View: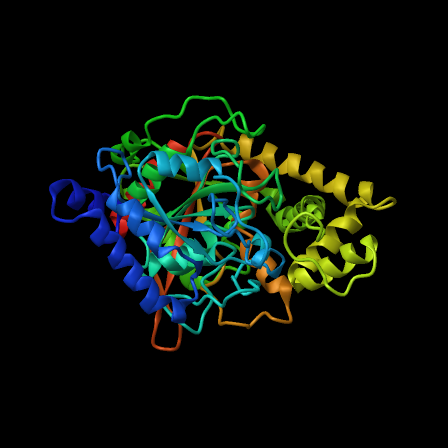
Length: 472
């Protein structure tokens, strides 16, 4: 069994008990993690204790879940994949999503590796571990939630939570051949998520099925007074959307997403997925999203700008890395950050500080905000023509490890199809849609992405379920 639904059925039938389930996954941790590098830490004794006391009457009773290591869980380390927090920070509280998982009976039993402070598209920027793709150990799992994707794809976990700022759930889900869903902005509380870019970040599920993703979102969604961006709107029953089908829906295919830069093999698979929806009664409509070409540049102004502000709290004074070589408080700030942050984090802080500085604020930051508004407007206009939008999740298959060490732009461009959903606050899901030949006698998974209007998370599940069933 590899889904939450299958495991829950076995638990309720008495064919399996929670302690056995947890022990099976702990054994996989011990066996596979030295090779995959998907987990930063796990607490076996606590997981076993929680399993022994599991309440199977709850919706996630006895089911083990892994968290990305930027989501706080009381009493556990929360490193964000950084040396800065590796020795000196233990979470003093549960994030809202962690609390909701526990209240639903889930067993929180591991911390997944990630790009440092969620800044990356390969999980190669982690300061603590190297994570590889379970389908090909010579390739990246994607990022920044690469560990969260790899633990699910490798069978080390039934499901995990990640965070998505510009594609960090969907892109690794596509690279690892699983389902990854970014909820609408404001649908899930960010309280307890270590912030990268507050206007873009969202927590979401990575699973082996669309049904499992809907189950997890049902648990973690909802208004939270502890998060000022959390929306006080009803949460629908997402399970009802899974069997509706796609007959009568208009599905948009943006021409900018099927242009130069897209691997021909991926385009073929995604168009085949669209054709399957058409055979089931959906209408395919070509649409125009002309500002797509500006999305990456817009994102890499706005996200670093917010990061430079959010990461100013890591100063070596209150928690985390403090330099032992500093002389005075200003030197402590400088040396602690120099020693604690990795190259990509420093790059983005510098970029963000630059675009916010006097003389450049209007030229870059203000202009990027205007383009963001334009992107949002174009999506709104598109959704007047179509119900949802279907695109590739990534332009290429997962690249080889360290192939972009000296070329960060290569990874920045890997998010070209996912960034716009964050800029516009839209729900989006990546579902497996086949595989391509790596050229090294392995098959590399490919994902297809569905985007829908804000707060129409139910619609991405509805279409995602049909794509998944068609794939099977």
